[in-house]
Image (cartoon, rainbow, N blue to C red):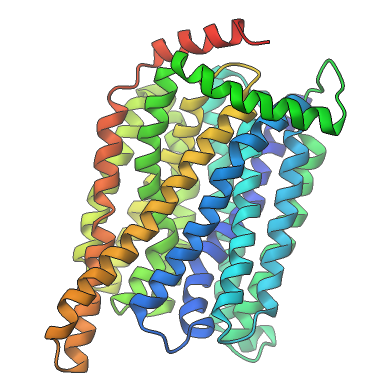
Length: 446
């Protein structure tokens, strides 16, 4: 394998590595285990709000630190070093979930938040390395490859983890609870092991002038502050980031809250886990196909297709009543989830100044994480508001349960608003103007 291909595969293997956390922990077992083990006995809408709060706290922390870290990484050519630090922080925290005792929901949230900080922090630098491992001609395809590898890698380990929970005695375990806790250990090991391919195969260009650590940090902060001055010349980037802020919030919210929502409206956890597994294996070829679709049909059209699909998916999710419908929903999500993420990442690379990828992908991830603050809180607030309004009208436990499900459905339905706003804003993004603005900034930067 030549050096260029090795760099691409080394980069894509990080998605294979860290997607185990996104799948087994964030989307799969943590929401279920949080409700049934760490927050056992709490009202379903309260535990949903607690989970939303955990996601929002983590997103806020990452959002605040992302652009500064990206700027520092650009100045020190340290994208890979930062990726390694955050990746192993996330893996360590994931292993730490094994130690959290039953009923200790506050500690579970703390460790989970730290894990998300590691996961999200590493992704800033993973995204920023994309332009350095491929050309603009192939960037959509390579971005799709990364997400495709993520779905496959996350799906393979998730399948093993699901088998462990459905048949714990086969693996010599005492029950499903122990199987879930062991799954957290397996994710940590998987994440740490496969990150080694990125460490050894991806090469990052060294800066012409070597800087000491203090100089790098000072230069990074200066670059971060200079970015706000550049924004007036980067109107296209600003509009795209605002559009992305809204529609990717809907995507991230559905990823993080789908299982919790399914449990809240009465589905069995085993059905929800199987549906997630379907999403992973549908998502593997779909993400790669979307990358090709972006090349052939156009990135803008493909992103619009995915946004429209998510609007239909959300409406369908509000109305579904049977487990088989959740399976159908899982297939639909798998077909577009990786595609909209991959094409958004590669499209953004066309709009930003060359040599400043870490800084600008820091802002890209910052707005994505600020959006993830809004979505889970929106679901929690809408759900609790409706529950508080209609709750006094219920006189039996059955009526209370029915009102709780109505509140959950209205909560998830509110996500449609984010997709609609994102689609409207995306209409005003002019790619050619964006390239001219980026070229101007590159020419006039120090």
